[in-house]
Image (cartoon, rainbow, N blue to C red; front, top):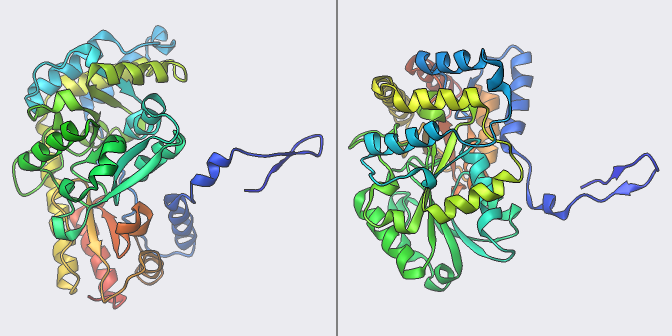
Length: 399
C-alpha cells in the first residue's frame, strides 16, 4: 500500500492490517456496470443481494412517525427495553424458541457489522476460528480484524454444500474458539435440517467451541418446511449464538437492523465491545424494528413465494441452455457451476458481462472452494430473469 504524504512531506505508514484485505469485488463489478451502461448497454445486475421489494407500510410509518419527534434524534445509548422484548417474543412466535430473555439480545448495525466486531470481543491474537469455504466475506474479515487464525471447512457438492463436521480435523476443532455456520447459506443456497444441527451441536460440545450462526435468510426457504432458527434445536442455547437480521425478510437493508441472540455471556461481551465504538441504534429505526417484529407476517410469506418463482425462472432457464441446474434451496441466491468446462470464475464473470450484459459474482471471491462457480442474486422479477437468460442464449454461452 502506498504511504500517505503529510503536510511535512513525510510519509505515514498505514497499518499492515490493511494488507490482509484484497480488493472489494462488488465495487469493481459496479464500476464496470456503470461503464457499460454509459455505452448504452442493457445490463442485468445479479451480483448484489439487495431486495427490490418495498419495505412494508407499517414499518415505514413507525419510522417516519418516530422521526417527527425531536427527542428521537438524540443518542439512544441503549436498546429500548421494548425492542429487546419484541425480539424475545418474535423468537417464540416465529421460531418456537422459548426462554429467550432480554439479556440474551443485543442490537447491531446489521449482521455484517456484528460479525465484523464479534471477534474483537471473543478472540485473542492467534486464536483460531472455523469458517465455511465458500463463505460470505465478512466471516473471514472479522477474524482478520481480530488477528485470529482462519481454519476453513469446505462446503462442496459431495455433501450438498452443507457443513460436514465429520471431515473437520479434530485437532483443529480443539484449537478453535468458535465456528461460524450460515444456513440458509450465502452464497451456496443450501438449507440445514434437524439431523445436521444435531451433529453441529454435538460437535461443539465435543470440542468445547462456540457456534455462531448466521440466520439472515430463514424466511427465504424453498421446497420444504419453513425456515427456522438454530436456537430452536435442543442444546443450541448452551453452545451458541445467532445473528438475526430484518434486512431481507422486511426489505430494510439500508436501515441496518440486526441482533445477536443467544448465550448471555457472549451477548454481554459483544455489548461491552460495541459500547466503546457506538452510541446505539437510531431510535426511529428501533421503532421500525419493533413494528416489524410485532406486525403481521403474511407479506413475508407472499414474498418468499415470489422469490421461489424467481428461483424457478432462473434455474429452469439456465438448465434449458445446458447449464447444470444450480444449487438453490434457500436464500436469495443461486450457486451456479460454470458452463462448458470453464474453470476460472472471474474470467467467466468478465465474459458474461461483456458478451451478455449479465453481472454475477465470481465464486472465487467467497473462498478457494468457490472457484468454478458463480453466485447469482434473485433481484429481478421472473420476466427480468428470463430476459437475462435470453441474453445469455443470444451470446451463445451454453453448457
